[in-house]
Image 1 (tube, rainbow, N blue to C red):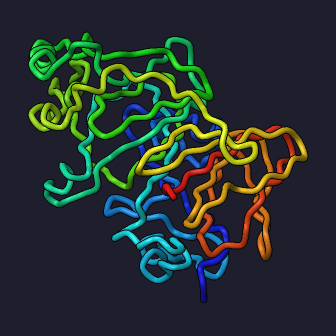
Image 2: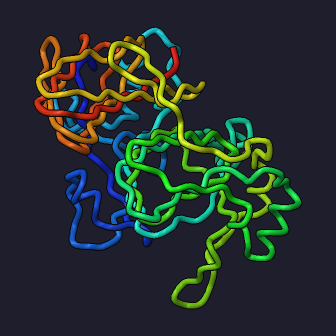
Length: 325
């Protein structure tokens, strides 16, 4: 047995108080009757979640098992990491999330238990009027200024923010203070880490009048005070019709926009691809496989998979996420 075909993984749905129902309405996720479906974890190998294969000979295996059993097929010539290094998810933010910051790899390795750092990128799928992204600190904000603002319950005065448009991408390296505002649906690619420090929760309290726990000292220690304001990325042309949204040492994040009845190959890559359709419809085809794609559907394409081509049946937008060469 080998791992040489596109893997369709079962989404893991997460309900949090800030979620809504648009993961079902916009992206076709099989949500229940509740009003707080916040995240759909599409590809994950982590103690907090495991993707399970839904198609082909490897059906029922977890991504963690595949990573260990078929490292050459999945990763190609690169040295296999301890676990699958990326996590891809969709988010529906119907309420403003807490202000957070994530450690880098060296800082996260000192946690108990140790974890990866968390560098991430967001692509805006939908945005209601007035929806904001908080990304980075305003110019001149240092540790002392931020600490004093948190103490005064005025952390928001230190944050840079803007109203994003659908299709815009924001890159959030580890150490960048950030939050998603209400009214946004996001596609997020990140390191496979769940280490988060919360430094501000908008002075909210629960039904018992108690605030959520904060991690103020940890947050202040890992914040990058040189980062400054963070706006939307400027896409760069790359392979064929693909455009690069983010180039980093943790992942490459690209987008393909097609018309009807167009066929384009995935970018050249020695390792795996994560591909996800955000609008339109089409098929991912190659020798021995033909997988239909609808909005919100994701495939993990191992390195051993024959060269794959996306065939659009209508104007479509396809995302591609992979490791740096």
